[in-house]
Length: 255
View 1 (spheres, rainbow, N blue to C red):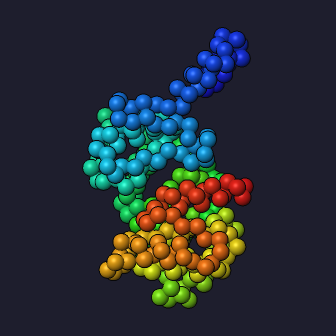
View 2 (view 1 turned 180 degrees about the vertical axis):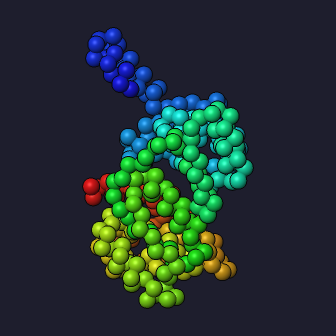
View 3 (view 1 turned 90 degrees about the horizontal axis):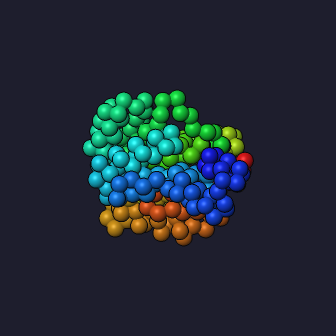
């Protein structure tokens, strides 16, 4: 980008040519199956996040390594073990100094150049209702940290034992967080409770945890959408990525 702007400033190219080259610079084509968005974080504050689900492992590997090479890191969600193995093998073959951080619970992988540091932009809270909700909560945590958030965590504090919520919620509020993500399955009541007690945005994440018809996350989703507690936003079922990126944008607004 700097080279293009210098050529424009010196009169070597006109506005039309500079615009054309800048557009090309922001998109990197990977063979015939992907176009990675190099400058997404500059436009939106959120980097491109690679969804492994539905892709072949070699596609996940090629996209991840290209993005990490261009930006210094790549974040992949919904990974499988074979995806991780393919990425590790490619990194070893190319003798590039990359760190591979695999979170088995969250099903995420961060590929980053050694020494790369994520910027810090603010704090958020992350509350999980039950132990079964932790995989979705962990996905949210990993994504939020990549987006520059310090995450204060409280797990297994659901409404079946509501007294468990008091101390961790006080700690989260004392940290002056910009937003709180609340992950809950079953009837999905916890986000409504939290939203009624705090003065920051709350992002509810319904999970596909529970029995019978509601076990697909539908009961939790509908409960959160029907909440009478003001200040509660709701993302889709098991969507830790969506919750984390929204919370990260809240920290940028607060900053």
